[in-house]
Structures are given as C-alpha cells and as structure tokens.
Length: 316
Ligand code: PEP
Ligand code: MG
Image (cartoon, rainbow, N blue to C red; front, top):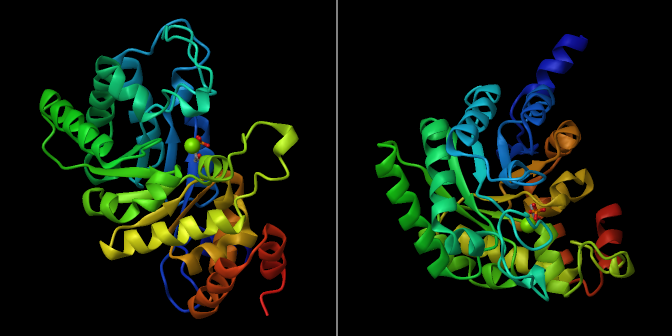
C-alpha cells in the first residue's frame, strides 16, 4: 500500500476537476536535481544559473557551463528544464565583473540588463545551454525584463548562438514577470514570448518598494499583498490572451496554502523548492477550479494582506 501511495505521489498533478497543473522545482545545483526528481517534480521551473558565477575568481567557461547544464538535464531524465540566464548584479555582485558600484543595485544593471550589456558573456552562456540541453527539454527564461525591446534583443542573441552551435531544434523563450512593468505589459510580452514565469520575490519587492532583504520592512514584503495579486491577475489575463503557459517560480509557489489562489488566478505551473513539491502536488489534487476562481476574485478585491490571508484560511 505504501508503494501504491508513493507511485500516486509521483503521478502528474491534476485538480479534482481535471485541470492539469504542472508542479516543477527550483534548482541551484546538480544535487537539487536529484532531490527534485525524488520529490516527484515534473520538471525544473527555474534553474538559477547565477550560482555558477558567484564565489569564484573568474567566469565559468563554456565547457564548464555546458557540462553542468547537461548534467542537470540528464538527472532530470528528459523532464522540462527551464534555464534562467544569469541573474547577476543587484544583490548578487561578482568580483570579476568590474562594474562601477551602484547606489541602488536593485534598480541597477542586473539580470538581463547585465547580459545585454555584456554580449560576449551572454553568448557563452547561451551557446552552452543550447548545446547541452536537448530538443524540447530546453527552455530559456530571461530575468528582470521590463520592456519588449529587451526580449527582442535577447531573441536575436539566442538566434545567433543557435547558429553558432548549429542547433536546429527550436527552443522556447520565456520572460520572468518580476517587475511591475512586465506585469502591466504582460499582454504585449505574451504576444512574443513562448511562456512567462512570475517571480513573486522581486515582483513583491518592486511593487511595494520594499527591499526583500531588509529586516526592517520584512513585515511589508508579502506576496499576498492585494497590489501584487492584482498584478499577477493582470499578467494571467495577458498570458491567456495569447494562450501562453504561465508559471510561478517565486517563493509563493512553495506555500501549499496559496496554491488554490494561484490556480484561480490563472497560473498553470508552480515551481517550488524540491522539499515543498509533494505538499504542493497534494493540495493541487484537492482544488476545484470553480472554487479557486471564486477565491481569486475575492482575493483581488481585498484591501489588505491580512484580509487575503484570512480568506485563504477560511475561503467560505
Ligand atoms: C523571484 O524574484 O521571485 C525569483 C524567482 O527570482 P530570484 O528569487 O532568483 O530573484
Ligand atoms: Mg527575481
């Protein structure tokens, strides 16, 4: 009977009324990939590649990156692998990239902005990803997007890297929705992106103008703030308009108690920490989508985070 229960936990997650919700895991290392598979993750919704660049004296070369991405792809056994291009800068500085220090690093040259400013560094990473992760398993996710032009420039860099590694199988390119600008522009972004993934950690920080790492404002930094929920709802409408999959890979995806709300808002893929995957899947299986939609509608109208939390605890 235990074996049957274990098999059931590994099965894909579907709501009680039959809507498929993918439950993926966030990874930062090879070991995480094993933990994710053991926990029943159906893929990787966010590979934080910047871990490769931090705490060292020089950038990892193309061969080193290739071997890491290939290793993770292999451990995932063909499951989808969403590789996020380096999200360095901001609060993740790297000593060998001599940039002038910034007065407001969170609002500075981080994520995709840095990649576009350092095209040679970006090209090395793109070639490594495109050569290492085969076929449909490979999806590329762009961090810290705030306008359509950035997606277009990244797509051009990806096309050039594809040609360089002679890759012919297409790759899906997605954008993170983690700035209020990207959430508000989700519809035009969805017109050109293959998928989108909401980063609630940064989306919350930027929406509430409250540093995610500053203990003094920690009480305010809550992704269940109604302003954040309205942006998520708006992003979901934009994604739906173009029938694009919408994931969520911020910390909120690891809160099983938020899963019904997120499904109700229109999120179709949740990427949690490996440890949280079983609990999130278990909750997804109890969700009725009509109830989830009703819950999301009420949460959107809430005027405080406390009100949203109370709704989640007692949805009646
Ligand atoms: C996020 O901002 O929610 C996110 C998933 O990215 P990171 O936490 O790596 O900034
Ligand atoms: Mg982020």
